[in-house]
Amino acid sequence: MDLGGGLRGVDMGPSAIRIAGLGAAVRQLGLEFSDRGNLPVSRPETRHPRNEQARFVGSIAHCCERLRDRVMRLLDEEVFPVVVGGDHSIACGTVAGLSTWYHTQGEKVGLIWFDAHADMNTPETTPSGNVHGMPLAACLGHGEPRLVNLASRTPMIDPQNACLIGIREVDAGEREIVRESGIQVFTMREIDMHGIHHVMEEALAIASRGTAGFHLSFDLDGLDPAAAPGVGTPVSGGVTMREAHLVLEHAAASGKLLGLEMTELNPIHDERNRTAEAAVELVLSGLGKRIV
Image 1: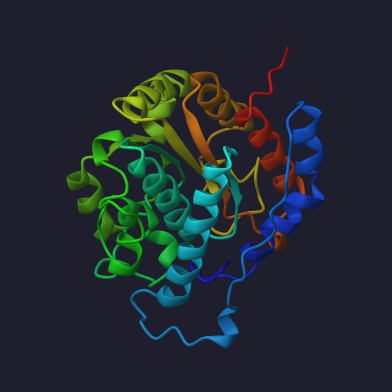
Image 2: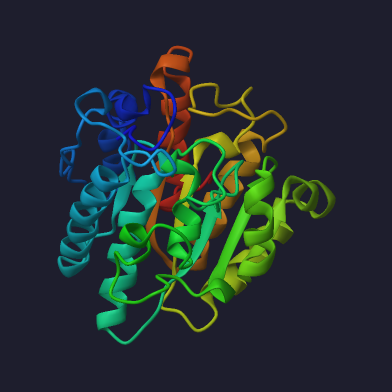
């Protein structure tokens, strides 16, 4: 899906990750792997945005409903969901599926959101109308009702169990939402000052406190463009590839990772598919691959 962004191309992200060999690589870890295919998504050129403050939100919400239901079926099968996008608005569906499924078990879910951007805009604050800048706000109960109300509980995630890691570009209008939301934010300044190991220790404690576990939604633009050029909205000054691996390795080692998501891979801007190959390696770290 690329309905949530301003540039075409991220809809090809799943194909690029398949070409990079995700399935074979996961099987080499000794795990079973099943590719459940793509969810059908409308093309932007076949739809009118209708609401310029939340462009294509109806089609996005419809796709997220189907993704929510798909994730819940996987959890019913006791399968670990790896969701690949696509722009980051898909996270509303992934998180809704996890939140609803665990809510039926009497439990709640934490969230670690790795991103260069805060993704905390609402239709009232957005400078662009692009919904991929709104999904974290929706998961925390703010913004477009068709996204906010996707799960059986609202908010999908309690702010005290949510962390935002790696941000370095925040829109003026969303800054106040970030501050007032109650989410724990670790900007690149905190990562530079304290190191990714310390940041992840704190994030894991927050996301795991009183929860069944946590979902990790990983936007590849959280990486520095030198490590991941093939993304929809690159921002300089991001984490290194090694720091990104440590994020995923900590998540796997915690034993609390309930779902994993890779978003915003744009093959049009990639170099010989190396960002897709990096995404595969990061998924493997999230699934428990170790150096020795």
